[in-house]
Image (cartoon, rainbow, N blue to C red; front, side, top):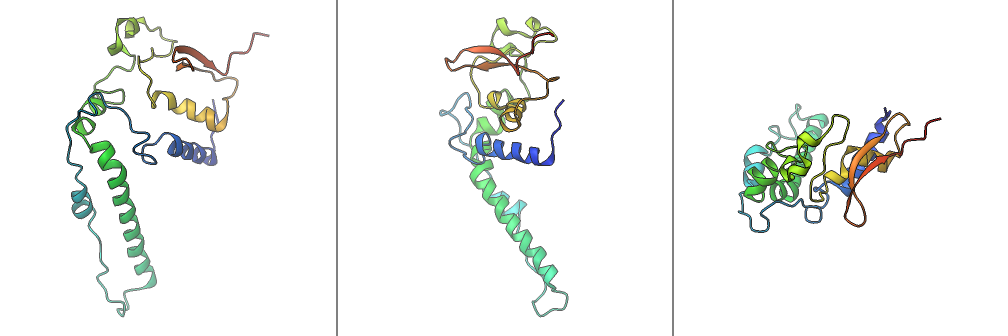
Length: 195
């Protein structure tokens, strides 16, 4: 129901990077894992990433060689800069944040968490009062018991914060936490009264 331009998408991505993504602030926005801080350290494989997966590429030609054109040198320079950027991102974000502990690499949050492979999107694991069977087809999924940065910054939230309310034919119905840390069903924008 909402038309999104390329510029709108860039604004949404910029908002996500500044406010939600762990890459911009690995410590401050670090997602919790069940057993942390009592977790098992895990090899981040930084050395392998730098020296096996991303080997440097050296120019095979001398600068005096006629085959070594300005375009040829530019290609190698671009590759060098891209390699350095990827290695920096891996060492500061992906390695320690995503693979720094056994739980992050292959357990709890990654496999059994809300964004994992083995989980119930309807909140069944949080208790019988929010099981899949209690949800009707038109209702939003029951909420989880605990607040989570991902749940509070889903696509609908980012779109509203960056681009404003959706068209009148679209309404978001979500469970949201209020200032008093209580869950409430929120419809945004509110439905207009019947004419």
